[in-house]
Image (spheres, protein in one colour):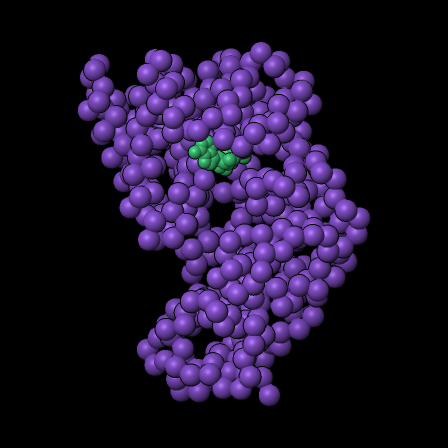
Length: 401
Ligand code: SAH
């Protein structure tokens, strides 16, 4: 018989409303043999079956819902349906690129599973015990449904440890991937390093915002902070930027960025790449009175959890304040936070505080900014209304007035 978990009276509300996470403190009791990643039936206090979930014995997120249909078994056919539906969504909504997030965890009904497509290569992250438990089945279905040449695992994200899973990387299917995979996006050629790059190799989530930068860059002097392999920098060069300065502390990422500049035949004199600490560099550039017409701030996740939020707010404020003091009148700033623990409201407040502080440090009167647009990830990163945690990437397009 399948193992079961029973939710405490009054604590089943979120799950009943399709929130996929069951926290340890909402579980009243367990029945049967529950194991790492195995499927459990989920009952409410009145012993009514709510659905089925994957069990995570070591995590505060004790189980993740696979289905709210008591009749639906969790088997090969279940994963076949979910994966087919995720792929169909991308075919409908994502065009003109071969760098696509094919599966985005909870948003595709597959908690903990991330699959990114880079041309004929798929790179997977199995970030929950449940996704890990079904790895073989998932890989087999992915190979069948996508016709890909290779499937590579990058389950080297720290969240695995909270699930009691070891970090793991390696080939899962087909031939070993190239160390640099060529992809196309917005008419630009990018090189993705699936083996040593960040996450699965590329920040697919910024595609629409890279396009926006391309559209806004003409004749502007651009500063791209935390540039990684230069996604925004190349978009700015393509869009006709006068000059682009890009900063990152990863030499490997910058090496790829430079290769891509050549590959796209952009004039190398229009770009310079600084292998430096972004906080120091921002300060130094400001002291040296450098001014820009377009600044991109896309830092790493400063708040990995709610506990880090106060410190993270200070860091976001610092970089935004400094950037605000370096942007010309009518200049633009695209500023981002990819911290899931920071919601849009908190981010907007932080930006407001940064602009206040930027003004008070300024010799030449007030600095004023307006929000032209709120920014988010692309349509291959769908967001569930019942799962705000999935809406991690937020940004603002600011104009100095
Ligand atoms: N904007 C990029 C993604 C940025 S990810 C894109 O669109 O592809 C965050 C980047 O910040 C990483 O490349 C990381 O190497 C860099 N980084 C982290 N801390 C840094 C620091 N203190 N100074 C400079 N770069 C830093």
